[in-house]
Amino acid sequence: MTVSITIDGRTVKVREGATILQASRENDIYIPTLCDDPRLEPYGGCRLCLVQIKGMARPVTACTTPVSEGMIVETTNEEIENLRRTIVELLLSDHPNDCMICEKAGDCTLQELAYFYNLRENRFYGERRQYAESDGNPFIERNMEKCILCGKCVRVCNEVQGVSAIEIAYRGFSAKVCPPFEKDLDCEFCGQCVSVCPTGALMGKLSMGKGRQKDIEKVESVCPYCGCGCNITLHVARNEVIRVSSRPDSLNEGWLCVKGRFGFKFNSSPDRLKHPLIKRNGRFEEASWDEALDYVAQRLGEIKEKHGADAIAGLSSARCTNEENYLFQKFMRAAVGTNNVDHCARY
Ligand code: SF4
Ligand code: SF4
Ligand code: SF4
Ligand code: FES
Image 1 (tube, rainbow, N blue to C red):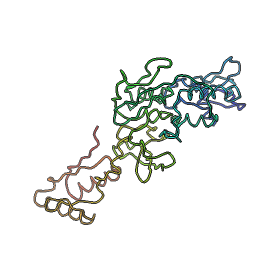
Image 2 (cartoon, rainbow, N blue to C red):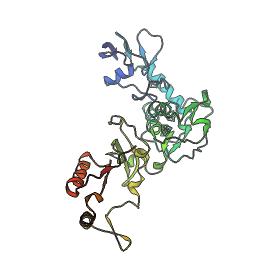
Image 3 (cartoon, rainbow, N blue to C red):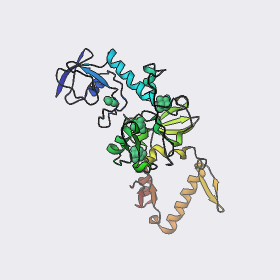
Image 4 (spheres, helix red, strand yellow):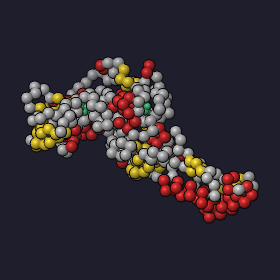
């Protein structure tokens, strides 16, 4: 079922039950947001998506208001833009002026909005939140002075990850996102909260100080860890992977587990194997691929001749493609002559 509505003078047909924000996006009409994520339940916290509906006394939030037949919506005019500008000003009035050294600079929605509204000076003065950065967890840097309380981290942890490791504690000026009893974060460290945070309040510790946005080249890849094969984006600076993210429009909808998101340091580890090694006289020595494969073939032949093919087993990997795994089992059965084949895809 569809309904007909008018947005900024354009009459469009949209899905019944859609929100004004969804209807606008489907029709390429931009409405700024801070607390919305299409993958999460609507929240209505930041008030940046305010729009006017003909016949209604006050602006409403586009992300929580469903469309209805004949609705006439205005997404931008002087009054709305003034409201949005004031909201951003209020957020910035209690925010560190840290963009010069902030890891998020260049990829920060709040910074983008400040630029869009040309907010250099701030009309609002007063007390600012001051929190010690004391979280000793190994993966996530939490700087709550940069938090705008959009609630995305709390919602993703609850709705997507099903962990509920964090909540918005206290109320009013004292409200802040924290783990129970304000202890250090002790959770799955999936980093989904980092991935949805629109500011530098949550950052991955492993990438701190490794490069600004302008230094980063993004390379699309597939997570090397398990058979799910999540799509990942490698952030590469000076030939080193410094961060892993995932696009919301990927098959895994941008969600990753701790291994995929934070387990990337092996890439540049000096211990990483780059050549085959053959053990000679009790020591591993570098060898060429030809040498290594000849050696394996010779040893398999010797074992088979002496003990039979069933003395040999093959263990393959969920990191290989289906085709590689197919060829591997074919090799074990047809060339070696054993059905002792298994692989590591176990949860
Ligand atoms: S979180 Fe954004 S607005 Fe705040 S200091 Fe960092 S880059 Fe600037
Ligand atoms: S890392 Fe994952 S489990 Fe931990 S708080 Fe963030 S979303 Fe929740
Ligand atoms: S930490 Fe980030 S995602 Fe969480 S409420 Fe604050 S700004 Fe939003
Ligand atoms: S995006 Fe609608 S209130 Fe935040």
